[in-house]
Image 1 (cartoon, one colour):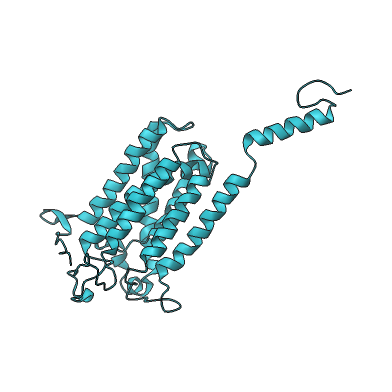
Image 2: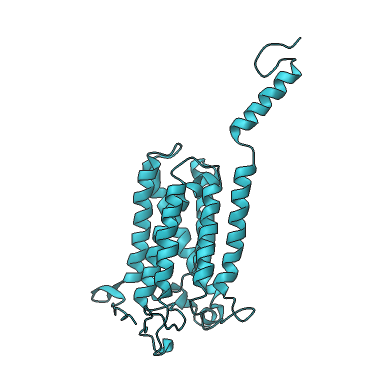
Length: 287
């Protein structure tokens, strides 16, 4: 059994001002997106490094608003109806990735419209950088001692400080997610997107990758106590929300590789025009 590293959730305390590690992890995630995006923009046609500040602002707004509202709606609506002001206490945790995803997609759609870009051009550009923020967020969950795993007899089980976790060793599922949804997914997407891919393919791979990793890790993670298992005695809300992501990602990837490319459409149009004018695609009029 590994010892749980007791880290004070408050990183800096200046009188009444308290800066929590959970919030710092979000800042690290946004900073990583800005830094990686600035590098990526230099080698990606249609993007400029100076556009990243606006992009990160839109993404951060969508993440925070969507993530918080998603948690309230998907996981604990009754509690927040009883105490609406608790919605603003984000330093205590309580963010939903799936809600954050919806918020970010809306924000990126607004960004694309403002800057005259296509929606999937923006999501394909952003997707490889997102896992760094996801990994940082899961480390924040670990420091908070929340979202612990199920009881285990594996040698890396930990006893979490929250009395509700009991005295039995549990999976450090937050670290599993930080590794898979953060580091591994980042490496997959970063190397996959390093070569030209059809529009929507990178976005689709992100949805498939995150959805699959999250679905698997949920088997080691305790379901939210206010919900428990929502079906079949094993299905969690996280798994139920991840399944549509996987299906949507597969659809986008299949569509991306099967739909005609711009060059093939132009070739087909040239062939059609040549046929109507009596010319072969090569150029001379047929006899």
